[in-house]
Length: 334
Image (cartoon, one colour):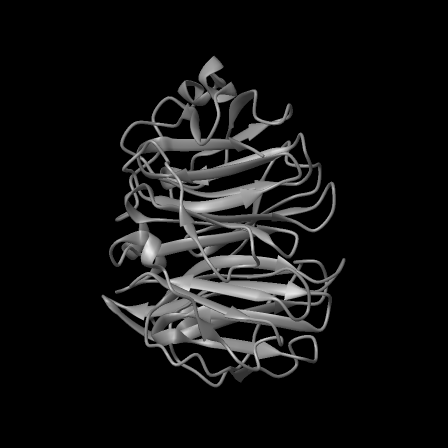
């Protein structure tokens, strides 16, 4: 099964040993210029997602159900207990108190700003005719309406796309139909009406009506796309395998491939984030980090000081964070 986690971080490990070992203080090296190691997670386990609700409060999730949290902008991190042994694929907050965490086939929620997490819904193979669901990405467009994307598989084969919708803040979830049957990996919304989903075979799906209907956009690529990011309703970027970078300035009506000669190869690109319309970063396999200062028209390579795969990226007002293989966490002071 060519799922996100198979492509990105390998099979999920068992329960995290000694959760207290995941309490860290940021080393002084984080004050150096460029990308530097802010801390390391559990040895041999990958970190798959990073999310900051504001300049101070952030979360990182990874294999074996590991979740670590900061309340001081990343100077220190402490572990949290989440009742799962599955890899954490995504973390997202719709407001200061209410957050959502995806791990394997389950959705976990918090109503106290991330102090405690509980499993609110798990999807069993029986819900999908015996096929196994995997949840990858979650976003909310308001207090009540939210979305989750993923895949449904039998053995190693993806047999269908998975799109779930809630209209009651996550109390209940309903499956929605789509015009494709491929693995879906990430979604992003710009406002409450316009949204995009990316996945296998160069798939980009778009909605103009708040998710009532979804239509495929032309990408002219068969590369798996792992991440999509929109700065506004017109300017967006998508990245994926074979050093694929796509850019649009018309809301996805047309997607244009961007030259990535800075890579010097065909690295898989896994996450893209922009601070405004012009300044952006991409991270990927083998410690790849690219930066653009012209809205993604051109990209230059940055030194990451690691060869670990980098799976996720977040850019804030003053700092950027990237997380990846073997517990790697990188910080960049902008």
